[in-house]
Amino acid sequence: MISVVLSTLALAITTVVYAATTVDVKFANHIQANLPEQDVFLESKDNPNQVVRVEGDTAKDPKILAQKVFAAKEAVPHDPFKVGLNPLGPYPKGKALGFTLEDWLSAEGSGTYIIDGDTASLDLVLQKLVPNGVYTVWCSRLTFPPNPAVVDRPCGAADGSENVFKADAEGAGKFDLKLPPLEESTKETVSVIALAYHSDGKTYGANPGDFGLNSHVQIFFLIPPAQAAESPTPVATAIPTQAGGLSSKAWLLIIGGVAVIVLGWWWFSKKGAGSPPTPEA
Image (cartoon, rainbow, N blue to C red; front, side, top):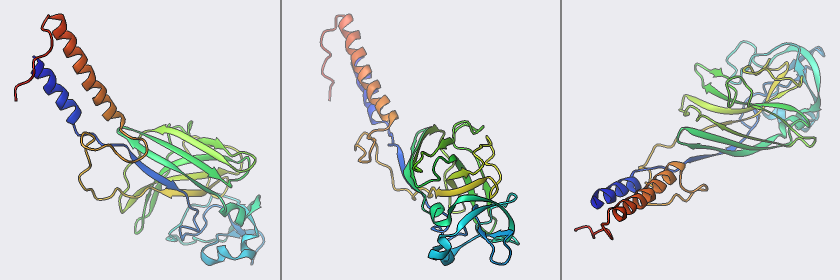
């Protein structure tokens, strides 16, 4: 019987278990991603009642950066790849947002997205957001041209009850969430983590609101496709070097193996078998 116990233990601790996957999150704005700014606008030079999107080197001009930004008077669909008929405007002018283009583009953030089996965690630290601003965090899917498409989903609960946070008076914020793993990114379609500022101070549940009017994506991160894989290293032969150590599944197997030894020893002691015999080679 002892041979069965030892065999079971050997099977438990040599089962291939892989460590959690950690993705380092580093946010960028549209200009840093070489895309037109989508959700805040500058007053048109040709018509003070209209606004336009800004892009490229224009958005790096100090005189442009010092200008106040506006919302649109109505929702303006996202068109970061400029495939539509009017990707840059003009659009009807909405309310002044109370800050400059430089203020808006100064936002930054970083953190980690960790996948551990059938669970994941998202831990973000943000700076230079809109002071006291209301934000939501979106776990969207973006398909690149030639057939661009976006599906916006709140991070966490599908009703948007877990994706809201508010920046402090200095524009700093933190966001921590346990959630199901996001869909894996490919070369054609990626998962995106995006922060939307709500200039009306309201959130809209499963809906991000009206882009350009009351919902404004400030920074985002595209989760890269998984690297083409070499054979992963089993926990049985090497302890992972990344922060976090062994995965939860590895710990469960180790604890289970110890339990098998203890229970096996107890069983033989109770039967009066004495010390377990040495297994034959």
